[in-house]
Length: 248
Image 1 (cartoon, rainbow, N blue to C red):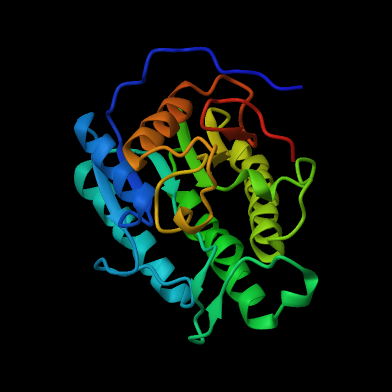
Image 2: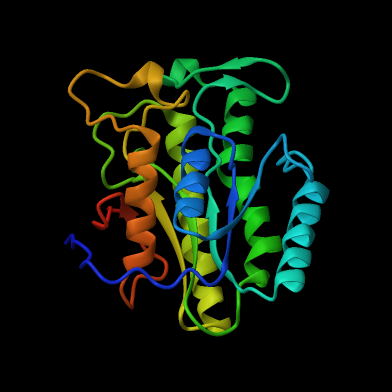
């Protein structure tokens, strides 16, 4: 059963928002939207200082410490943690080229390893180092950008093995983290969000005619609306950019 979220007042922007992957298409748009709302934002990515590198856990720990230092300096709570990183196609860590697989004949170790590194392992280490920075009381949201193609129940076309499987792994990791997070703070939310098809370098080669392709600023506005209006009981859920539940 699916449900659409009610429109609720946007909570006061009295906390820090951290966007990982803040220089990417959706990430940069999220940063801009938050700043336009008057929110204090800290964007981290591969080209920031400190740099976020999923191949190096020490860099993830250093970024978390950087956030902890900012929280201590400002006295603000970490109200929003948004993980907007992802990999669908491009160069892997070893320098090979990876594309979405159309058949099992296209499966190869290097592409699979890189997909899981960026889409699941890296975010899992973010959970380890960043989720403890969320406040122990009061509403806060940790949102991990996933994809509808990571839904096992919604998979009717097959293909895209590495991306589907690594996003499905991310969904499970976030769902487990949500259960643990609730033990620390019953008002905290840890969710996965499907942003839809967005006009970014990640999706441009695969945006077929007829799909609802939206510019990044529109997608960012929709995602923030969902995050800010998630009702009680949403912890551990999987939602699209309209706030509708997505099958696991």
